[in-house]
Amino acid sequence: MTDSGPTLFWHRRDLRTVDNRGLEAASEYGQVIPVVVVDPAVQTYAGPARRGFYHASLASLQQTYRTLGTDLEIRQGDPRTALPELAAETEADRVVWNTDYSKLATKRDGTVRDRLPEEVSTLEISDMTLYEPGSILTSAGDHYSVFSYYYKKWIDRDVPAPAPQPSPEVFSDRQARDIDEIQASPVDSLPLPAGRQAAEDRMERFLDGPIYEYAETRDLPAADGTSRLSQDLAFGLLGIRELRNAVDEADATAPTETAIDSVEEYRRQLAWRDFYIQVLDAHPETVTENFKDFEHPIEWRADPAAFRAWTQGETGYPIVDAGMRQLQAESFMHNRLRMIVASFLTKDLQIDWREGYAWFRKQLLDHETANDVGGWQWAASTGTDAQPYFRIFNPMTQGERHDPDAEYIKTYVPELQNVDPETIHSWPDVDTDRRDELAPDYPDPIVDHAERREQTIEMFERARGG
Ligand SMILES: Cc1cc2nc3c(=O)[nH]c(=O)nc-3n(C[C@H](O)[C@H](O)[C@H](O)COP(=O)(O)OP(=O)(O)OC[C@H]3O[C@@H](n4cnc5c(N)ncnc54)[C@H](O)[C@@H]3O)c2cc1C
Image (cartoon, rainbow, N blue to C red; front, side, top):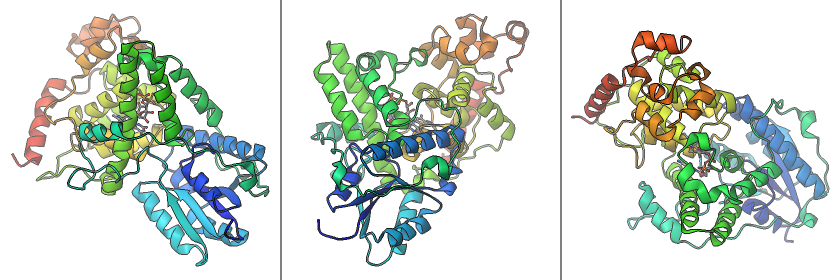
């Protein structure tokens, strides 16, 4: 112990005590006071599901600290004011936090640093990714913008061990106000159980079996074959090192070669997350700007009616509508569907990816700036390693390939309940009278895919200066 004052550990997107590198670092200085600042400004970006999940996860974190004989200090307000006040009130010597790479967070954290009393030092730790952004670079010393090259290096690295939970003795015995007294946000009914234990349960369930079939099932939305851990990683209920180590253990006990390939496929997805976070770190402007340079602005359409139809799942394209309705119902959408609906918005409706991103940011429980922007810019052909602009998803063949029995579609689009899969997958080509007869309450297709496809290729060629 080197100093007399306590260390504040500021939890942000790391709502856990296990495998928390910043918390581990804070505990090396002596007495720790864990703190969260609920920022109403940040909360406005989140819909009720995400706010409720956050609230419940904070309650679970507070409970964990109470079992460790301490408490979680929860403040509400702007961290740029709340943290300097708390540091002064507790006579803290330092404030420690884990790095958040979004522009908004980086700017805010800089102001917190500037406003803390002069004698209070700060320490930022890299925790969110397996390998710190900027630690895997091209031979020219740049961040990677091509995933496959990045992955080759990522997979070759030693896997860091999870950080241990600090021993209870390091924590201050302060008591704090209960989260429910603070009423940071009402807990609405949640699409998934929140908190650390629920996240651990989800991880165990997936690693206990489904991971071995992941390669076959991950692209079939009706199969429920993915891990459903994205919100747990986004809120930091799970540490990336603990997840990666657990995945490697599953690899060691994989029963077949196919199962080993599936585990490998799953690891690749975790690498995508690291990849997009390092892109965001290097190019924070890509939250609002295209990653790729275009000679002329892309002539996106202003079409509020089409945008509304897309958000409501009423485009008349069954697979698109199913995805958008899953999002509304569950605050989640399967990855294949995210790609399909993002392609549809940008290539069929020719609406700017930023409008789609803003909708996803509000609706998704697992919203994570780097992944969300990365996914949108990929689909819009404006991003790193993006879908080429001339390769445009056909929503009919996507439906046929990934939901052959239309099981997923029928779950979310009950108007098509009695229609056979073949007809569903060719819905826009079905005669209008026949469509009215089969599903009188389901909307007609709002655009012609083939026509829009040609227009979109021309739109991109003009933007490229062709
Ligand atoms: C337009 C669009 C927007 C997206 N927005 C988000 C978002 O806000 N938050 C988010 O976590 N993911 C986002 N993704 C990526 C992906 O769709 C989700 O991570 C995935 O569907 C979450 O389900 P899961 O945990 O069951 O995934 P699994 O298939 O089980 O994957 C395991 C984990 O790997 C990571 N991962 C998987 N796919 C990707 C990917 N393509 N890019 C980066 N990381 C990935 C996630 O952390 C995920 O939890 C987006 C993709 C697209 C195309």
